[in-house]
Length: 583
Ligand code: GTP
Ligand code: SPV
Ligand code: MN
Image 1: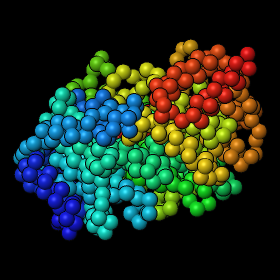
Image 2 (image 1 turned 90 degrees about the vertical axis):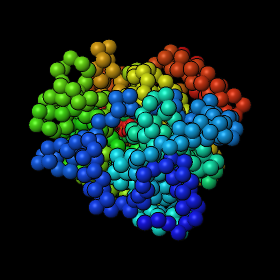
Image 3 (image 1 turned 135 degrees about the vertical axis):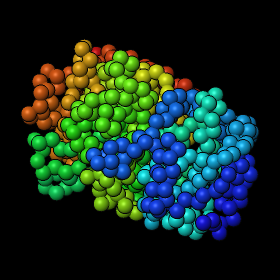
Image 4 (image 1 turned 180 degrees about the horizontal axis):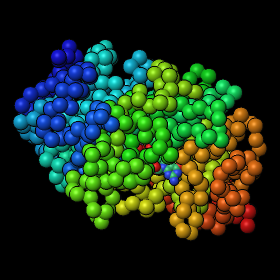
């Protein structure tokens, strides 16, 4: 296989002459190709088969111990002007960046096969879908891209028809963290990544293309590329609403996207459209419509059990690639909070004795096709996507942020999004549990200056009076003993119900300086172990704490200087004023 498209052929030739692979393979995306690569990786030791009786088609990959998460400090946006990348991104001059990374690519694929992966982000016949080609020397990347994207012959055909595509060059290099870089050249629609084989660093269709490059394109073209799940919520009366939620990494997107209604909610159904990324476009009626550019899930394994997420638990019982989980004595995958089995071997391959930290890495992941999800929506393949009723921001906050509140307007909602903060998680290398600003859950993923990004968000109010309402949720409030105040998981449906009631004008709300809060009776706690006092705590607005928070948000916004939209400053000033008036 090769291509009739000269720009593609020339680029592949030039990469081959730089990286000097032993051979070149054009991926067709077939089942045979997938299985052949799986077999080859078992021979080379890259993959280990799991117990094929209980876990048919499942394999374990152990990554290099230094290569277990995204590397934000090594991720760069290399726009011509540093201001276009903004204070939210690491920046390098494009010429310097190319020189630096090309030197590392020089001869990097010697003795290896170079795989050319044409892929399509979004349903293959969707006008909103975008094309890319990833060149990689990692067969692990190829099989993951097979599960995560529409890749192969059909994508190549569309690329040849359209004539343009995002170029992604990846090599695992020698996995030396000092020679690891993830670089984006938005003006050239190009990504270059070397030195990591892990997730968001290496599966270039995901965060690199579908968020960093796509967000840049979306701003120019008038749409949004967001770190959001997309979920359909069907009531017992058969009314379905679609909601898109932005929570930072490892803060509950996959879980909410495939939520199982609790027993108390007979007749409710949840339909998953996407668990990580949404591309949002205004339609001719001014409605925001969402597609999921991905076709599979790269999900956090720890915490997944039959009670928290039965759908995911069942889904990863077959045809799943596990990365960095532990093993039981009978060669089944094991992770913290699995609730069944016992660990015998840890994620590093050492005997597990309980003394040296978790058996599964906290950022261990499963890769699986979305089609295996029992709650997979039939509209996940719809070319025009689904209409969105509500946008929801969220974070992992021990205190302060209430269980749920609603923005007073689109503009106020943009301020709420811009002020999102969350405790850091194991999804990126670095400290865990430190609260940091993560606007719209896009801190690591926005490919341009956040000031321009907020202006772009604000501009939607000028283009439509039919926009979704905006909310903020927090499943992670804790008491003094570190116990979660809210049961979370399936019970989050109770909060989604309030959100939909608000969208439908079925309930009123309590106005506060920070937004509209539920009247306590409007959150159904029937059958829950949540006392009225706990609910009150979950729905409280502590004026003093919020004043401090708004001060900190104000300083954060100010760090964007002149480019910060005045509207956002004005929205901020209004909340501050309301907090002072509330004394
Ligand atoms: P990325 O794939 O990194 O973008 O993460 P994500 O946002 O999809 O997070 P995910 O759903 O995988 O959840 C991450 C962790 O949070 C898992 O360990 C979950 O068990 C836990 N979690 C998810 N939802 C809830 C919840 O409602 N309450 C509590 N307490 N924990 C939750
Ligand atoms: C995240 O970190 O938000 C993820 C995993 O979804 S990764 O693919 O590594 O970005
Ligand atoms: Mn994510």
